[in-house]
Length: 338
Image 1 (cartoon, rainbow, N blue to C red):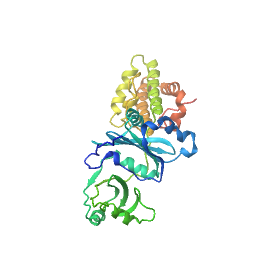
Image 2 (image 1 turned 45 degrees about the horizontal axis):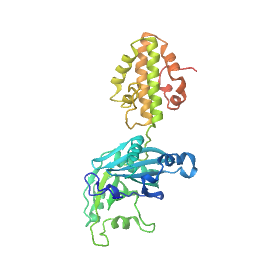
Image 3 (image 1 turned 60 degrees about the vertical axis):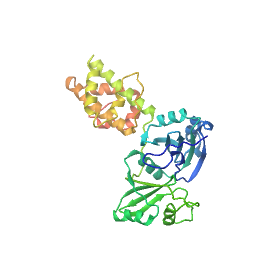
């Protein structure tokens, strides 16, 4: 199979050549056609050996996908492509992989959680590109000390990606692609600027982005659908008290909070429609539903005092444990008895 020639945006780096730091290769790079994706994603749930922190690299014709795992469970996904980088839903990543099963390739590697957070961050926020002169590595790194830079440096040398954390211009820590165990870090970083055996200058790119400590988790589709169902069950219960008025009231409140709670657009999507493809975290769903419920039911209480607890009890009974774990009831002024 011929490797794709697609290149990372604003870079001479071929997406098909990208290689990231790892501590163990669980699946060496192979064709997607040889991989049963459902079994791979279920591995961490069935087998203790699969409960590792790591990432899948999927090489598709026009992009490189990254899927991040915490203890064997997929928690987030991102795409590096010819027009940029972005976080995408895990579902969308899987759909793209399945669509290119004949032309794509996959590798699965274990890596520290902090490294995964940095890899994710490089796709989640705007990065600041830095000019690299292969003939002056000392001057390149001296610039970080001079500017007292704090953040993460992503250094690509011939598509091999390393990450270096700086704190006020001083080296703090890092993760390095294919660094020999016995080689000192300064020596390794210097080696990334060296010409290849044939004298060819290395292809170097660098970018800086803010430090992040942990990898956020996407809300799975099942949880999103649960919150969508709760939204509409609350609307149904309000409609019993105000026939014909509930949808209008609910939509008015949703429109009023959309600037502070983007997730409300997912929850308020019409019944019977597909779940909007949007990356959202579990706490964003909970916060959106809580604020929306508060404002909607405050209006109900003005008209019919004492109605809010009844609506909450009837609408959320089936999923009350999900809401309790999210702290939903504790942020509302009405006690709900079961």
